[in-house]
Length: 366
Image (cartoon, rainbow, N blue to C red; front, side):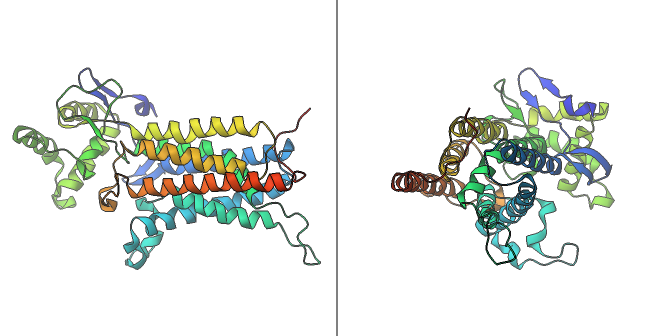
C-alpha cells in the first residue's frame, strides 16, 4: 500500500510513525495484519532453511522429516510463547473467562502477548520430540538423532523470523523505547515519534496548552457510538492517520508537537536478535560441530543482546515489575539463558573430549 512508505517529517521532531498495522483492512479492526504475516513468513523461511540443511548434508534428517519437524517447532513456538507470556507476565489470564470467543484469557492471542523466552522453551520441548524420530514396527526408533541436533537446526533457521517479528512490533508501534526528547522539542535524526504512546501508559506529561491541543484534536472523534470515550476516539484518530489520507496527514502534523521522540528499540532488537545472532551462528556453523554447540552460542548471544537492548526498551504497563539489582524480569530470564548456554557449551566440550569419535554435524567439506 502506498501509505505504508509515506511518512510525515518534521525537521525538528524526528520521524512520525504513521504505518498501518494492516496490509489489507476489510472493516474496522478486521483484515490481514503485518504481525500475522511476519509469523507466517518467518515459519516459511525457517522451513525452507531446514530443508536446505537436509539437502546439503548438514542434517541426517530427510526433507520429509524436516517438514514434520517444522510443524512441531511451529506448535512449540506458538504454545511456548503464549504460555511463557501468561506465566511470566500475566498469570491472571489463566483464570480469566469471558462470554465471547475464544472464552479463555489464555487463548486471547488476538490481543497480543507472546514471550520469546517461552518460545525458546517451546522449541526445546519440540526438539526433544523431533529427535526421537518415528517409531518402527518393532518398536525401535532407527532415525533417532541427538536431542540437541534439532535444536541446533532450529537455532540456525529461526533468526530471520526473529527479525521479522521485531519489524512487525515496529509497524504496530508497540514495545516502545525510552524517550529521547520530550514532546515539542528537537529529536535526534534516528528517533521515532509513536502516536500510540498516548494509549500505551508510557505517555509523558503534557503542559496545559498541550493537553488542550490534544483534546481539540480528539474531540471531533468522540461520538455516541464509542461512548464518547477518549481512548476509543483516539483509536479512530490513529486509524485516520494510518490511512494515509490528506486528513490523516493533517492530523499527524497537528499531533507531532504533542508526541515524544523515542528510541526505536524494536529495530535495535531486530538487529541484535536477527542480524547479529544470525551472522554469528552462520560463522560458527561453517565448521562441523558437536550437537549443542550452535544451541549454546544461540542462548549466549541472544541473551546478551536482549539484556543490552532492554535497557532502553519499556515494558508493557500491565506487566511492569520492580527491577531487581537493576535488571527487569526479561533481563533476568536472559541471564538464565546465558548461564544455560555457557553450561551447555562446557558440557558439550567435556563430552567431546571423552568421546572424540562422536559424530559432528555441519556443512559438507570437500
